[in-house]
Length: 122
Image (cartoon, rainbow, N blue to C red; front, side):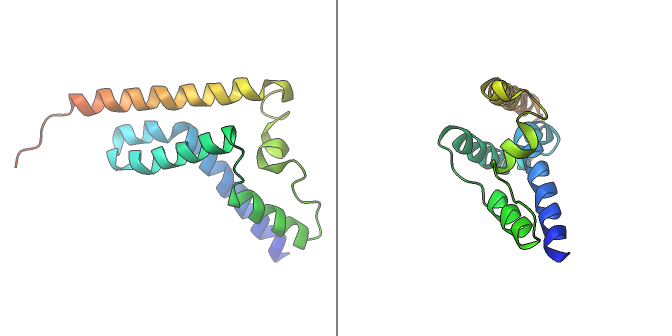
């Protein structure tokens, strides 16, 4: 029971992380300090998508599911929960490019907003 709950919590954290990778740049429009962790998260997402770096969250969820007597994640997190569910299996590259475009738009908007901010008085 505890392992199944842990696996579900890790799964939810993973989904939140993916949402942050995709949309965190827009949060930085309001909270500029969030841009640094967003750049780090987006860099991790880029490395994961292009080089195939394994995410520790996937390993933790898989291990917890196996300890709970479940199958685990035979296709990793993305392959299990997103590919073929959120977007068609043959559209992975397009989905990745869409997310990259959203991130890029958020960063451009962040830069524009940063330039428009009034200078702080000392």
